Amino acid sequence: MSPDFTERVLDLVERIPPGQVLSYGLIAEILQDGGPRQVGRVMALEGAAVPWWRVVRMDGSLPASHAIDAQAHYRDEGTPMRANGSAVDMREALWRFER
View 1 (cartoon, rainbow, N blue to C red):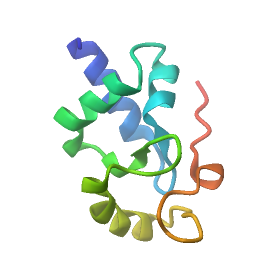
View 2 (cartoon, rainbow, N blue to C red):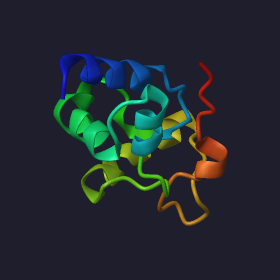
View 3 (cartoon, rainbow, N blue to C red):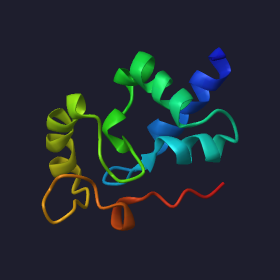
View 4 (spheres, rainbow, N blue to C red):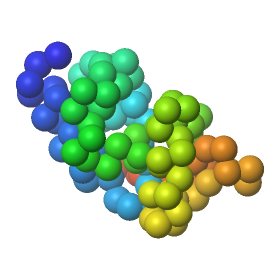
C-alpha cells in the first residue's frame, strides 16, 4: 500500500458524516483504487485516528472485536440500526457520496 492510498482512505473516512457509513468496498470504489481488503488493512493499521466505526462491511456489520465499542458511537450519532441492533441499517445509514 502506498502512503498516498492510505492518506486518501483516511481522508475519505474523515468526511463520512456522523450517523452515516460506507463499506470497505465502497471506499475502494469511490477512490477507484484497491479493494475492500486493502481498505480494511489501512483501517486496521491507521484507522484509530479517524471515525473507524463509520466503516462497516457491506451487510452493515463490524468485526466482532469492534462491535461493542462502536455501539456507543452509533447511539451518540443516531446511526440507523437494524431492528435487532446487530448491525447498521445500510439502506438508511449509507452515505450517498457525491464527487
